[in-house]
Length: 285
Image 1 (spheres, helix red, strand yellow):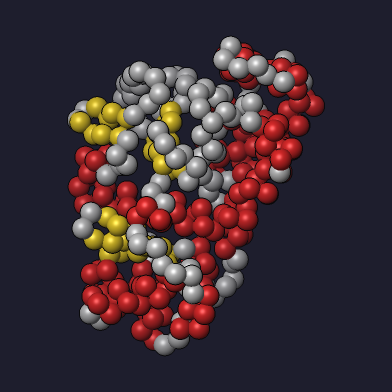
Image 2: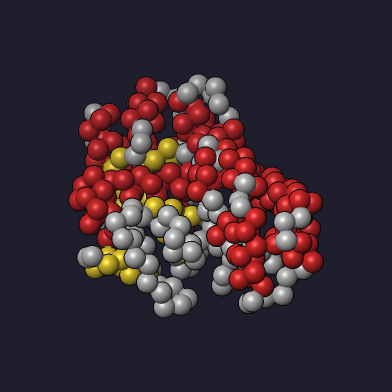
């Protein structure tokens, strides 16, 4: 992976500008769709965006060739992206996807409970909703006007600091924000591989099946017909087994299924890792 990292690092520095064409919206459909969209980027746009990058950092020869439309350089970029994904993303995809799905559940619940105001107010502390303006901590002073366009909110496992927006204001407005990682959202639980042996009996199976797209402990208790304490205990065992993820939402906690938990409910017909192409998170920012 070191060679791929060295190749890609000049294109995606830890801080500062990087080309917008590297994060096409089609990436939401998976790696293959994102790569196809990247490959179809108009040559003029690639040239312009890499030219902007060259004003803030020295680019290696192969990236300068990429800016000039060299097909071999584009092939090198695609190959490096695939290799990096296989080494650094794919092995951890079930965990990454579980974090993203949990964040989506929290945002969806906020939207259902209080509409757009509640959704925007629920975003991480680096963003503040003061209607009609969403303020975000950002490295530079910048205004992005929607002008009647919608705003696509993208939760990112890899965005660990400030939210990120596309540089080109003419592109569809996108705001990438950091998800709350499990270690930040709920007390850590000790690793207990043998917890899988506890997954027997009607009640616990009912708890797993009742979590669905996400629910609080009190909702789970009502769905299964048990006390809140019992629902919390069962959810804790499922969490230890890697089948459930728990995030705090206000004064309550929200339980969601991990890819492994969802696969178990489907009878194991789909391996969790096989879901890696269905939805991609934002690339490291």
